[in-house]
Amino acid sequence: MKLISETEQLIIRQLTLDDAEFIIQLLNEEAFIRYIADKNVRTHADAVNYLTNGPLASYRDYGFGLNLVLLKETATPIGICGLLKREELDYPDLGYAFLTEFCKKGYATEAASSVLNVGMKAHSLNTVLAVTLLDNEGSNRLLQKIGFELKGTMALYGSQNNLYEYTSA
Image (cartoon, rainbow, N blue to C red):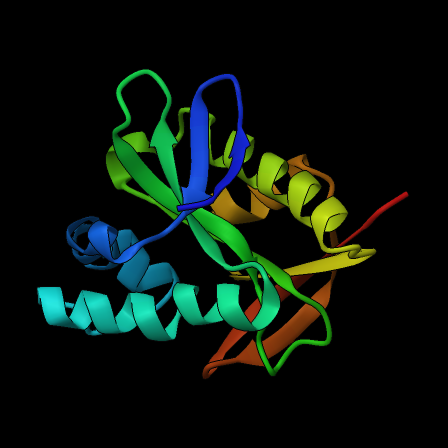
């Protein structure tokens, strides 16, 4: 497993198949299903398939993808955060999701900021996008807090989303 970054409170590393049980837990959180999607990951086999064809394939194809976020002090997995490449978008985008019990504690902001800075340098990116549902107030605030600029809205996967852009200085 590859370490992506370490912050004051967090360790961010690439996902492995050993993270399947955590993925089942996270992807079945009410907030994940409401604000991201129901990925229909219910079993260990579903999680292995999701990891293999999602994050692990992204690491292979692009050199980046969603990563596991752990609390440094206890090594407790609390969420995922990383850069994604979607066919629908012209540039990579920042994605993240955290277990509800670890939301509103600053962890998502810390992880997103670190992943963005490390990822842009490591992959020579000048622009990173982010999309979030119009009513996802927490994500909309987080993106603006770390320097993303609202560019407008776009339809993605059947819903209207805010489209944000971050450009390196």
